[in-house]
Image (cartoon, rainbow, N blue to C red; front, side, top):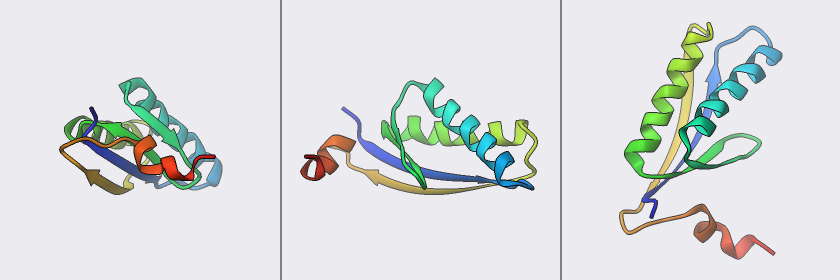
Length: 97
């Protein structure tokens, strides 16, 4: 069972909103290729899995932004670490109709 939920908002330095959107899409592609469970929300993306694996995905996202030409990246990260297990569904089940 997953022991962490990690939400990330990645903000690559670009000149236009269109460039930013393309880079954010590329960052989400890195998450998708990692195989972890995730949900995209308007202001951040939340991943579910083992903490060390999720932190590795964040590293790959940042590296990918630089590979695509942005000079720097800000990553705002929130972590819920619960060794006995946690899932997005368990945390939000009371809000689902």
